[in-house]
Image 1 (cartoon, helix red, strand yellow):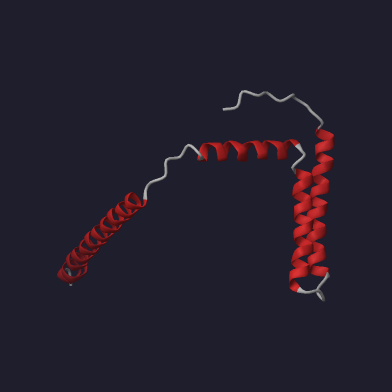
Image 2: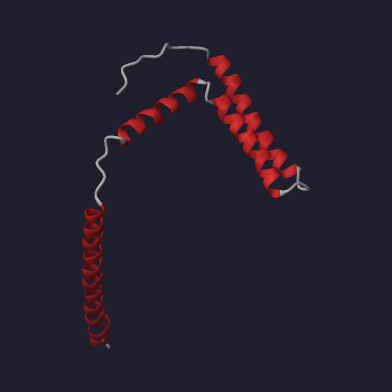
Length: 128
């Protein structure tokens, strides 16, 4: 956990203005994509990408954007601590999982056949 404490309150009005501007930029990119039907597909996609990147850039300087960047930074730091399995360990684990799935499938199939035999073939015919 991070022990930093942010100031309560902050500049919420400016953050709202920035988020509205970010939404407007994103909407402009989407609208431009559909209005420029005569353009090449890649050019239209580029216009949309510019709008989306501009929206993310503006949103990154809000309180939500700062907390998102901090979260991603801490997540990346935690990922460096992970001890990843070797190729041999991964293959062995995969093999064990496959064997267990096959055994359980056969067991459930056998139970299904036994119950079908007992109920449909014998109990229901016994009463008639």
